[in-house]
Image (cartoon, rainbow over all chains, first blue to last red; front, top):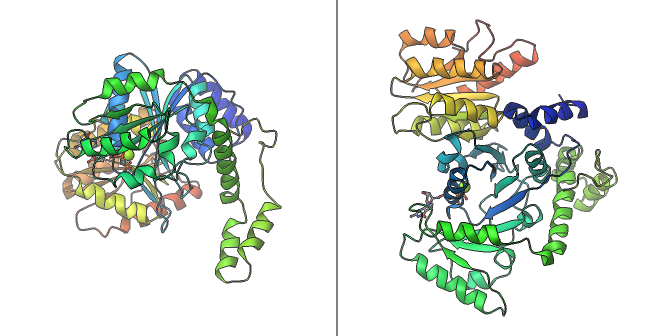
Length: 304
Length: 145
Ligand SMILES: Nc1nc2c(ncn2[C@@H]2O[C@H](COP(=O)(O)OP(=O)(O)OP(=O)(O)O)[C@@H](O)[C@H]2O)c(=O)[nH]1
Ligand SMILES: [Mg+2]
């Protein structure tokens, strides 16, 4: 049962008056690809990424605690992986963020990746627009636990925080190209565990190899709170890097293109055809590419 | 479907909740797990913000007697009468009737096959598509078992 554009604009109208229930439904509609006429409002979007289990959620809990105590509202979009086998998911980021449940100042939405690549979900940019239009201008996105090459978050976040932890690879990992290069800020979490000291040394030495790289590497503990306030003042003082525009646009383009492909009405039948060998991958792409459904977005207004 | 699995009450065991969550995930559902010790108000807000269609409540401690009906009332009062509620855990036979009357549509005891929760959701959504409301706010007498 697809919602009409008029339904989403009614939801938006109601959500803008502060109706949380309408906001919740609006986000669902947008997640499912429903078009909506939302104009961007001022927002500050923090992307938190890093390998599985490094403590992204626990750390986000600490950050929002700070903003909560300043009387600010924060929205969180937390992505966890979908099962490639069943398509189902176990979305458990909020288990580590009990701060989100204590009052109305936090709006938390768990999202299933549906095996979308890059650590995020399609339409996350539009979800952020909806949130900021409804007064939730401070937004935190937690990506799926990700590796070096998953950088789509740069397309949608103003500031990217990379979280890492002790005992995770060695200096060779830090040498490789990827998210470490484009993160605006880096936090080594679990400083209460002694081996985190060598992790931070590895990263610092790696960054020193590039001249002029003056990003701070923070040693923090999301469990006992050490280093958190320094991290927050760093995050709040960083301005989005204009040199990132090319990468951002490229990632937006790729994200949008893949979401069109994955939501294509032929995708399931083309996968069957590929499975029985009746077509090639090239055939499948050609067929779907020539009949892309651009919805209402061909005017480019809603493409981020 | 989007299913919130929550654990009201004070006891600290969540194995039962995780078993149900796993069965739902493997059945293709999106499960939002809340973690332990959530109050009725917190659970209602989570279901609302997460826009879940289903709420599964796992309980061991005897908290069901008071907490589950409070949560069901909270859902109705927050305009969430469409949400399908089921319960899992140790719930004595004599307490079940009251839970069904408060809007719970299925109760899964410790011995039940984990896939029966999937059968239940299938039946519930069949009923929905046939135009028979099954949410916590509807006064259908239907329950699964
Ligand atoms: N010792 C210690 N453990 C921590 C710290 N922060 C998080 N943890 C633990 O690390 C585990 C994973 O934490 P999460 O916050 O769920 O990590 P995550 O990066 O969000 O995990 P995914 O979302 O699954 O990728 C949990 O058991 C946390 O309690 C910390 O500062 N110190
Ligand atoms: Mg997490």
